[in-house]
Image (cartoon, rainbow, N blue to C red; front, side, top):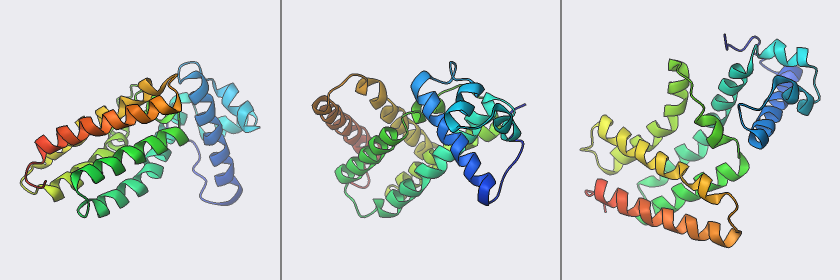
Length: 200
């Protein structure tokens, strides 16, 4: 079972949950999901293991909570990009999209590794698809004759391309990272130019 045991709404309990999730994010960024333990998470948070188990019955529950948190954090700037997207030409849209993604994975290094841990629940799939739905909506606004299925497929391909940034960043210098980002922007402009022909 991987449901959250307690859902604090405000005050001390909510702060404690925030501390626990911040600790979990930090531990999992360092050692990965498989190697992370509930004990290590509790220690990093300065909490007892019993406190952690009051809120999360197992590591899968922690993973699910982190995924929801990451998507909520990412959703606001993603939605803002969607709102501004119609005003941007494709190159500037791609620049904004890639820069937003790079900034987020720098702030949350556990994001990509944890979003790719296999989970089969319908709720988890819905969480993971929310960002793709934002992108799909943006693409449909730019090219209204796209079906939802087509727009979602393009959004999924775009997200898969963006995910490719992370492994290429490992061990790369700041200068090399900038070059890699530039190459990804070229790649996405070419791909989206071909798929969104009606707008640019």
